[in-house]
Image (tube, rainbow, N blue to C red; front, side, top):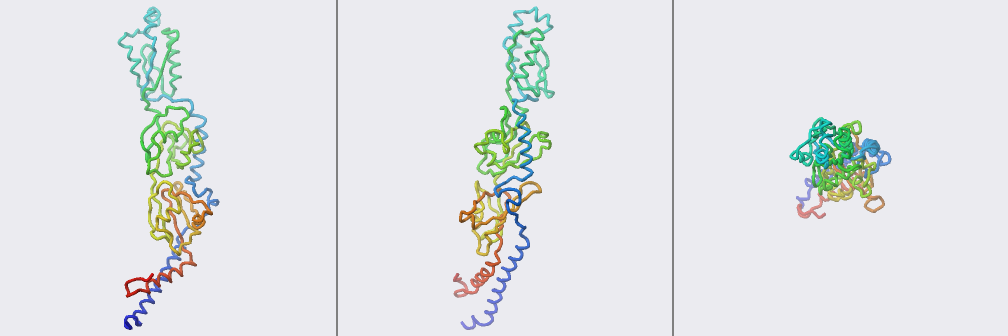
Length: 375
């Protein structure tokens, strides 16, 4: 027993104690050098829970204002749309007065030709539709009511009908669509049929966010709609709030060609003085305290009053927040949700580092039978 506790082993214990203390000191100094200088939320120009950068806010506000002044005048017919054009009295009127039809130079269609008006007409690539009797009519860029008025005017001007009853309906929408993709229940192309429909309306039309959806929507406006057509990040929670049923700063009116991509929840990285540092999946409503708990909780040397959160808001734009985890745990400060790509770092507290190092070293020193730890 004496030999086992003699000087050689004592020297080994001393080396292990010193190594542990040096490790703690080294980690402390390394983290002090690599941790970014935190910025308080009010200094960085946004709240902790804000997922959108200043560029996104400005672009969305401009877009919403511009679109509020347009996009409420109904569906605009476009190339490849299928139109159902019906003129119920066209044949009977002409048959009752064949002289007028002959004088107008119009060709009287036979009964077999009548179903043409029932089957519908496809808008050509140049925006024209070819109607019997009156010829080609430009349809692209017009609303159905505008096209009805133009066809009726031509029928009257040609002496074909005195009081034409023209009906134009969109049988198939192919030109004015909004794409909704990503983490939604039914991704796809959705026709823009209702005046004033907003981008939130289309997310709900696609079944709403799926169970793996995150809190971000990448909104790519139709090219030229805002002068640039570059993506804008929008907070999904803000976009789909119950009160956002009409156009609002977060919920602009949709236009043909818009693309909405609902991003998946993704992952957050929890680093620093936690039990199990690493990457963790973001669940719906995951908060800062929840992420730290998922990482096994904080270690004793952690400085919980200066926890940093790095968040990428846009290309070339990121922010650092400093938060007090102790205040959140006690309810003195509100917790906040995390999003994909967030990096949470629990730095070391110099006052706690040395006691913790001594404790860890003591655990290594005191064993029962050199194998069973007491602590």
